[in-house]
Amino acid sequence: MLNFENVTVVLVNTSHPGNIGACARAMKNMGFSRLTLVQPADFPSGVAVGRAVSALDILENAVVVESLAEAVLDCGLVVGASARSRKIPWPMISPEQLGVKVVREMEINKVALVFGREDAGLNNEELQLCHFHVQIPTDANYSSLNLAAAVLVVCYELHKAGLNSEGVQAAAEDEYWDQEKATVQELEHFYEHLERVMIAIKFHDPENPRQLMQRMRRLFSRIRIDVMEMNILRGILSNIEFNLRDAGDQKD
Amino acid sequence: MLNFENVTVVLVNTSHPGNIGACARAMKNMGFSRLTLVQPADFPSGVAVGRAVSALDILENAVVVESLAEAVLDCGLVVGASARSRKIPWPMISPEQLGVKVVREMEINKVALVFGREDAGLNNEELQLCHFHVQIPTDANYSSLNLAAAVLVVCYELHKAGLNSEGVQAAAEDEYWDQEKATVQELEHFYEHLERVMIAIKFHDPENPRQLMQRMRRLFSRIRIDVMEMNILRGILSNIEFNLRDAGDQKD
Image 1: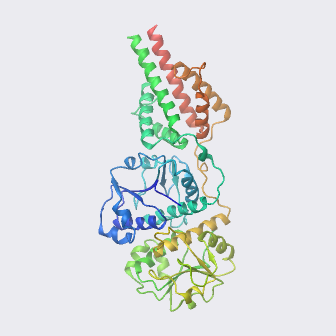
Image 2: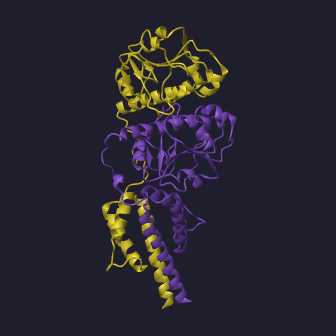
Image 3: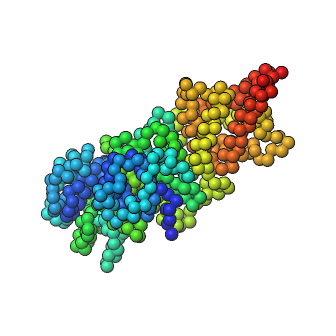
């Protein structure tokens, strides 16, 4: 049976509680139950309850957090809805492709589906927490989807992919991976470590960052590092620091 | 270009004007413009206008009629949304299959997409006016979709089928990339450089390699590094070497 309990829908800074309720209903229609709200403007709310209809349980169990980073900390696959192409392009995926990917991975990795503000979507920092951006195909003349509409389309494609997967699927790249993926938290610690080392070796000047960390994030989120690789990379960084310190100590 | 002017969305006996507005928005998001209302309870309505947002033109041009038969009189393909399996089985079609079918036929036949009442759907007489029934796959525990949600899913699948028919493929992961990919030769130079540095910082012992380079190759080939990222990584490696040598020189 389909089981999306490893998949969380994350709504960032939702303004209108009615939209939260409508999202809960759309989620439940497609078999999803886990909802996380990042700083909602108005929650809990009777308006949300009214629009949720029979999806009240999702609202009652919704988790409220202070930041997107907190919401996705334990996730191995983070996908953000994005209407626009950004200055620095990010790996894009269609809702249909996303469905196949999530259904294939969700038994191993926790998955977050992230949706931004009604008016402004996700900001650049939030988009860079994502491994992929999902873009819903719309008409060029009116691409602004209602929040619950975006949630519905994405959940619908995942639901369809789940139904398809219950038939026999072709073998895929990530299916046979030998290691668990690193979580967002592990990745964030890695970025902090990397930045420290790049400053120590005078490659990176935080006063004049020139998108360096942004590019590093894009590079490493694209790679989807597994836990053993993460240990190797952290080990390399530690050895660089150790060797620099060691050389410095001997000099003094 | 996609052109759905031969396709009409027909809403039968809609109770809540907000749902009519939300349907208009969903239609416009997916490139549809023709809306027919069969005996709506409350139309025109300011509530409908509020929910339509930028799809006001669809409400303004909506046609109001007295019966479904009147609404579909000139149509060569009539498809009704149906949640339930009926006593007399009818040809059923998924939204995805419907998309392919409509896009193939819509230049020749006028098409009606018919959606019933919020609470009770279409009655048997109305369902028998349809050539096909379309059933949106939902979770068994909560199959009752909001009216605009049903319209959105069907229009979304038609929109996708339209894009496919034009040979427009879903956005591929790498399609929008801003930089050329690094060549194999550049990658090989990078691996040599990386190995040198890992030896220098005493992370890597070529006498006891333990698959380290193999793992690094798997990691970086998976990433498909672009040329700017390659320059950054090579720069980092050079700065590590420089700082180690510098510290060493001062020590001697």
